[in-house]
Image 1 (cartoon, rainbow, N blue to C red):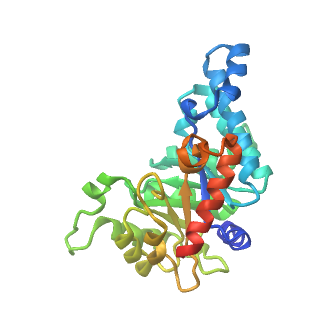
Image 2: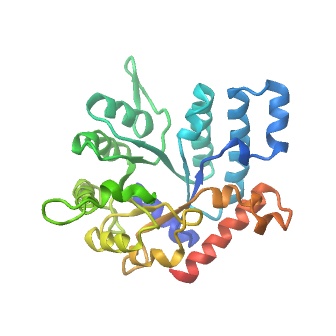
Image 3: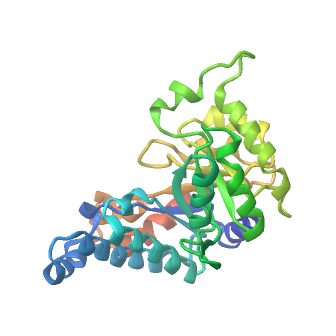
Length: 307
């Protein structure tokens, strides 16, 4: 199962890390984008080309030390068709380098719309009787706000094509409490009920490590809730955003692990891809890809020291 492939890579590399590929043009060095602008002008196509060149260097620099990457599709969609092509090419290249790819798409719709999203990102799209993969990510993020109707089509493709989900449960943003922490009639928070639904939805896809391919997004910025959810959801693997720039620290993640030290993969986006712009790595005058590798190794050491 795909969840076992992810856990095996985490164990092999001793790095429960996923690098977020969320590039902004302001993050891309001039020596990467200026030649492309000179040839194509400052166009969406040139922007997508610069992002892809940047992504290739980042992927090459970290593919042997981390198990996964997580491209955020909005950063590509904003450049239109060329941006979407860049997203697809980024996914394909990352997979060719042996990385697990988590497509951060946060879709949340029902019926045929959800089926179309699932076909595009997890399964295959039917073109007049010919089935073909489109984005072919290993996992995607989804929003469960519309209930089981918004999850069911993905579960089918997860089973058929050996794919996985990370369902939003307790997110890292400060105002998540406005909805996720609301108390229901039984006095428990909404996120606990959603977590239990995720556990129920994933029971048919349990791998050999005891975790389901249907996981949960649980923010590093909420360690108490993360520990509560781990106790509530022993078979649910957590995708953990919020480490680093958002304030989450390695020590905050201890309660999210199970007794075997498993159960999480921690996202770091600009803390790695934008490391060369920070004082710590700028002082060494490292290339952006070299700085990204060093930042990933520093994160690995930080997690090892606390977890």
